[in-house]
Image 1 (cartoon, one colour):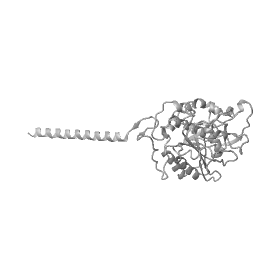
Image 2: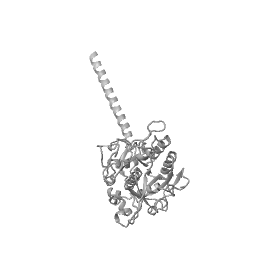
Image 3: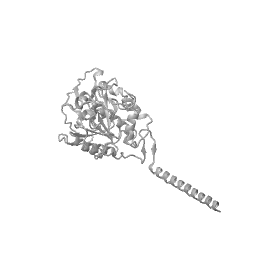
Image 4: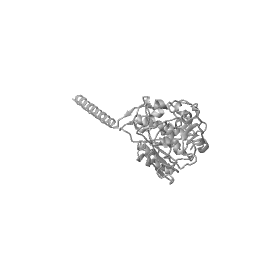
Length: 374
C-alpha cells in the first residue's frame, strides 16, 4: 500500500484540494465526465474499509462487509487510523467534488462497495462476495511480494467468470520489491504501474511483464478519516493511487457502454492507452498510459475473452474463458470471431460435398471399366 504524508491546505488556489488534484487536468477528467460519470456501476474497494463520515463520499457508499477485520463489520469504518488507505482509494474513485476543498473522483456517479480485508484469504473471500453483490469493477490497491495462493487465483477466476473487471496495483518497490506483486501478477488482472506529473515512469513503482497499463500515482491527494488528518486529506505516492484511477476509468466505460462485457472493457483500456517507453507492451507502462477520453470514445472491437489472459485453475490447467454476452470466441483485440455452430455446419456441408465427389468418381471409374471390358 502507498506511503502517505500530510497536506496542509492554504487559501491560495494552487493549494486547495481541487488545485492539488493535478491528475484531474492531466487525464482530462472534467471533459470525460461530460461523457460518463460512472452512474449505475458498483465498484468494490477491497481494502481497510471506508469511513462512512467522509463528506465527499456521502450518498455513494453501499453497505459492505469484512473478512478478517472485525473493527469494520459493514466495511463502513476505516480500520487504518494512521493513513486511512481504504477511504483514500474510495475517494479517488468516486469523490463527489463540489467546492474547491472537496475531492472530485474519477467516477463520481459510481457507488462504492467497501470490503474490509487483511490477508490473501480475506481478499479471495472478498472478491467472491463482491461480485455476488453486484460489483462490476473490483479495486485491489494491495500488493504482496509472493506467488498468489491457489484460493486467490480461483477467486480472480470466479470474478472474471461473473463479468467483473479486476484491477490491482503492481506494487511499490519499497514494500514489495521490483517485480509485480500479487494479486496483480495473476493473469487476467489489470495490473497498474505508476507515473509522475510528467507522465514518466515513477521510479518507486514495481514493474514487469504483467503490467497492463500505467496511471498517475505520484503526489495524489485523497480524503481520509479525521483520525488520520485534521483537515481530512493526505497526499501519497504509489500504485495504490494508480489502481484507483484505473478502476474509476473502468467504471466510466461500464456506465457509457452498459452492455459491454468485462473483456471488452479491458480491451478498451489497453487498446486506447498512449504508448510509452518501448514500442508495444513493456514492463514499465504495459500497453501505455491510460487515455480516458480515448477509452470512452474510440472505436474499439468487442472481444469475448480477456485480452490479458485467464488464470490457471488450482490444478495448473488453463481455466475456462470468462462468460460473455455472446457465444463467440474471438482473436485477441482484433474483433475477428468464429461462430462454433457455423463452423460445425460448414464442416458437415464440406463432408457431403466430398462424399458426392467420391461417389461420382467411383461411378465414373466403374463405367470406364465396363466399356473397356466390352
